[in-house]
Amino acid sequence: MYYYVDSAGQQQGPFSADILPSKGVTGETLVWKAGMTQWTKARMVPELKDMFSAPPVPPSVQGQTTSTGQAVPPPPPSGKTPKPDNYLLWAVLSTVCCCIPIGVYAIYCAAQVDSLYRLGDYAGALAKANDAKKWSIIGAIAGVIVSGIYMLVTIASSAF
Image 1: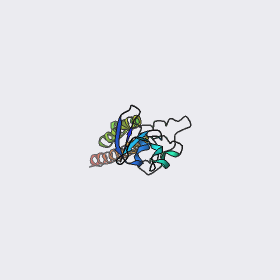
Image 2 (image 1 turned 90 degrees about the vertical axis):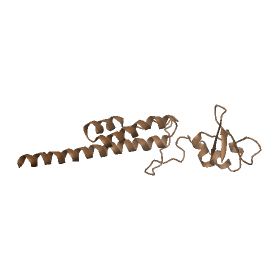
Image 3 (image 1 turned 180 degrees about the horizontal axis):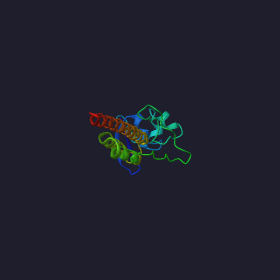
Image 4 (image 1 turned 135 degrees about the vertical axis):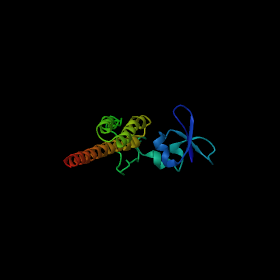
């Protein structure tokens, strides 16, 4: 388990070695673990040397996958990964027009997208965006089915 010094000079940790890049640790970041005599640049620690010798990958996307197991796409050439669509409008429409319980969960997922993106968790933001989209669609389909059944029951009851 490693500790590191963040850009504000604050000690963070402990974290396992494989988590360090996702926390923004680079080869120049000072790290320490039990058994080390002093804080050392990550690229100088034998166990971490290979991890930080390659060109840096943005920590928000390195080795992350979505909830469906798909790899997170690399950032565009500008270097900044675009925020995924949160599908909030679709979640609200699904709630208002179709199925309230499922739509509320879709809104909950949509509301988390921006927060996760701001925290640098691109994979989490992408997963929640996909969840919001999926539950909005499920809510709309459920609403159409329930409305259809209601109409059939109404028509059938008026015939008798």
